[in-house]
Structure formats: C-alpha cells, structure tokens
Image (cartoon, rainbow, N blue to C red; front, side, top):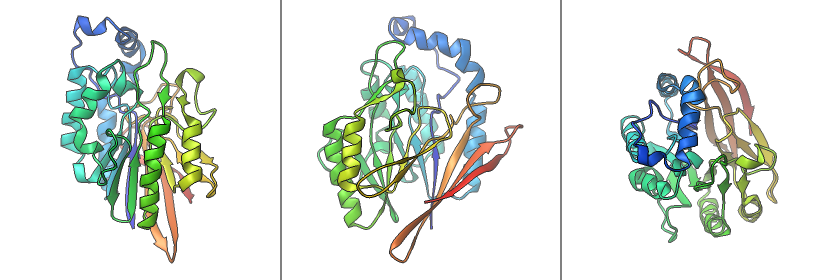
Length: 295
C-alpha cells in the first residue's frame, strides 16, 4: 500500500522583510491584504501541527499543490526553500507552484530555480520544467503548472496546449508502466470552482488531455476549500480533490487547516484508493478525520 498526503496554500509566514522598491508593483496590494487579513489567519504554528500530524501517518510521499509564499519576493522564495529542506525530503516530496509563487514577472523563474529539486522529473521529454513526472513505487506523479504573473486583483491561472500535449506523453507512459496516475495542479481545472477573476484559463486543454489519456486522481489547491469534483473524461469520472490552506487557523470564513491522505493499492487488475480528509481540531493540536471516500 502506498500512502500519500496532500497539502496546499502554505502562504509561509512570518513574511520576510520587504524592500520598498519591491512594493512598486502588484505586490503593494498583496502586502496590504496580508497585514489587513491574511496575517491574522495564516500562521506557521498551524502548519507545524499539520506536518506533525502527517508524520504520524507514516506516509510514503507528500504532494504540495502551490502557493508556498505570499508576494514571491526573493527572501520569501529562499525562506520557502529552507522550509522545504528542513521538512520535505526531495525523494518523498513533489510540488507545483501557485499564482502567489509567480506574483510578479520574473518570480516564477526565481522560485523554480530555488525549488528545482522538488520539481524535477524522472523522464526527460524536453519540457521547460513543466510538466514533469516522478515515479514512486506504484505511483506516477505528474506535476502541471498554472502559475503565471497577473494584473492586480486577479489570481487566474493558465494551462497551455503545449503543456497539455507534453503531459499526454507522460500520462501515456505511466499507463504503459501500469502506474497509478496522480495529477498535481494548483488551480481547480473545472468550471464553477471559483470566481472568474481567480479561474484557470485552458480548461479545454485540460479536458482534452484527460480524454486522450485518462488519469486516476487530480489534486489541486487555490480555493482553500475542502472539495471533491468528479471530472468527466472518455475513460470515466476522475476525482479532483481540493484542501483547505495548510496555515489556516480558526475564526475566518475559510475552513481550518488540514490535509488529505490517500492509501493506494491494487486488487487484482484494479486500482483502489481510500481517501481520508483530516482537519485540525478546536485546539489546533490534533487532526481529526472528517470525511472518507473510496475511488
């Protein structure tokens, strides 16, 4: 049995010192939003508890679906790298970036340079970073990116045809190897998941990709909500699972921090996945199972 945990939207804090020149951009709105709202409800201590609870589950792998930072300043990106080094071994962790990780032009490239060990695949298909595929035991993890710099007050993502075509090759190869295929993506790849100013562009490319190859499981972040949506494909329905922010404390309109746990095994010639959703309790000291599913 392969045990995989999923977290998202870390928004690591406390925020490193921001230089005045870095605020002369979209970052000024994010900086003000952090101090007016996010600072009170996103706390590193909450993430520490989540990671401690995940450790108790003796997982084989951890998936992180984006937004490690807030404004994607260089100090934030480096601080996130240190956090990854201290908490997330390269061989047992996969991540994809979110919109906050590419907050302004140039930030995405800086982040991918610093976080390269966690976004490096096992198969060279000549892509620029994304998509990538990591094969771990019976599982193939396909990392996709929707991360791109946007205008102020927008948090949209973009999934291109080029990336979809490359991902088809990886998904097909994983299928030929008889691996359980998990897609990691930040923005939910289906309609109605979020406000139009935060949606993903390129859903048609994503749907075409699924129709060509199928997949077994889709993990995403972005909404800070605990969701499940079954995506239609020519190969049948594929569960797309979201999760609350891994630093979210109580008292906000969004649900408290938690993680998804998946236990993947094969019975005969059929895959079986048991999903349990865990959220922190009122004391923020323990995670309780609040939902269970089988796919």
